[in-house]
Amino acid sequence: MRLKGECALVTGASRGIGRSIALALGAQGAHVYVNYRENATRATEVCDQIIKVGGQATALPFDVSNPNQTRAAIESVKERKISVLVNNAGIVRDNLLLRYSLQDWNQVIETNLRSAFVTSQAVLRGMLKERKGSIIHISSVAGLMGNPGQVAYSAAKAGIIGMTKSMAKELASRNIRVNAVAPGFISTDMTEALTEEQKAEALRHIPLARMGTPEEVAHCVVFLASQESSYITGQVIVVDGGMAM
View 1 (cartoon, rainbow, N blue to C red):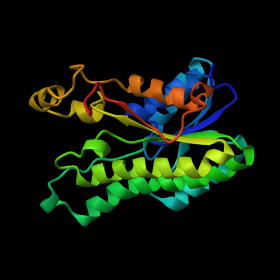
View 2: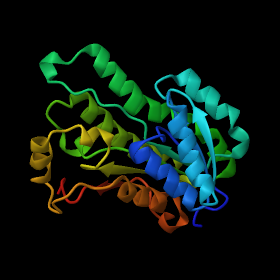
View 3: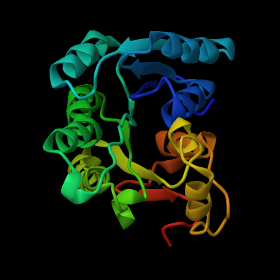
View 4: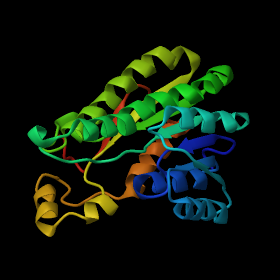
């Protein structure tokens, strides 16, 4: 129970990587706020699984791309003193640069980058008061390497990395650590939608020759949330089977 007594908020936690992160944090004793936008059933299932193993969890609905909703939701639970924030929520809108619409660009930047800024700012007052906290942003190898057809996604994930380093320098004196995790090719609903040819092409660039699992990303997040990483801040840990080497 490395996180007993801690309170964590995981955005986009009803499925995929966010779900695994929420379950892993809950299994380590944290009270987890499971954020979701629309699918209350999935979020409730995540909460039920955490509770089943002896943890505590609460579903917390808000749209991370809406700053007012985000601030209001976090304000409503401020008495819990959130000490771990995982900015995981994100969307993908793939297209070639010349065909990319401004609407899609704005949606990706607002959901994947601006939301991490807004959510971090909203929980920060409580962390500053307690003089402790761990903020973990979920970036991507796309933010390190770029990816054809993912100009907005790559830009947002690269922005996450820059924001991580700036926040870490600003908040270190208050005992608040800020790190990022950059997953590579992880087996989720999104990757399952790819064709076998697309999967084979991706695997060709991965030295470990397999896709990662959401649980492998979650293990890294638990480490960064715990005191085992108490001397680590401003770092980007890549979980990609060697893809970005």
